[in-house]
Length: 340
Image 1 (cartoon, rainbow, N blue to C red):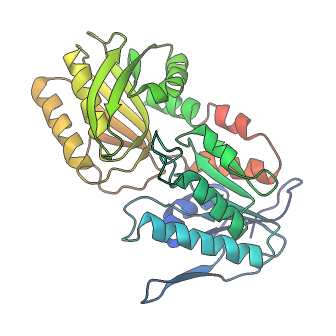
Image 2: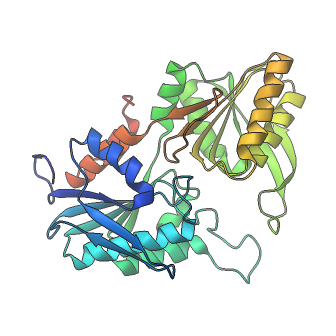
């Protein structure tokens, strides 16, 4: 199931839920491995089950799932429940370690109550459910709020949060998709935007968004903090869902005199009107004579994308992270390596 390794903590076994299979196969290829046979079954009543088709007793098991994305018609909750089935199946099969590889952590934006008391905290609920199913580690990519790591019980499981900043910046430079100033779409992402600015030796600006959290995906007003007049902008964000915030930010930046605008995001969910909204921005840019490009990582799989959309592949990075985990090495060292 795994190629020879120096002092591994246990033999590696990679497997996938169906929604995460394409991403998993790509990571496995980078590791010189194949996925362990498994079968995901959905019954007519809506129940599901996950069956492992090989012996994983004593193995270091990594289970891939993509909770969000257009891979199939399953909901984020369907996919999460199937991940729980897979985790439990591995735990009951006497795996030595069980790691859930979920590049997009479900419920990450529901990490606090935002001033309202009669609602749950889904990020913590998902953490407890995965622990109860038998997970030892959850590996994700640039989670929306670092504090979610504290929602896991250290004696049971922990969160491995992989940062892409240095690798993504190197890729953006190579593809000439950077800018003179890095802009955060809100003050909450300002520290991550600062990391991009430092890597690029660029200036930093931010937009202050005003939201009504009782109405999802709506931004009433954005106020710019910083200077973008006559400058090229790199707008960075962790999640683009319906693209309302991105479009609002672009409109504000153009009003403030920005020239060309590139967008880079880690989790391009691209739901609802997102593609249409951003296509309209692209058409506007062409009509007015300025450049617009968007970069999304392969955390979320999109096919047949328009020419203004670029995909930053992260599978090789994830492969190296998993190898380091198996060898008890430094994940930080992998994240900071310049090789993409």
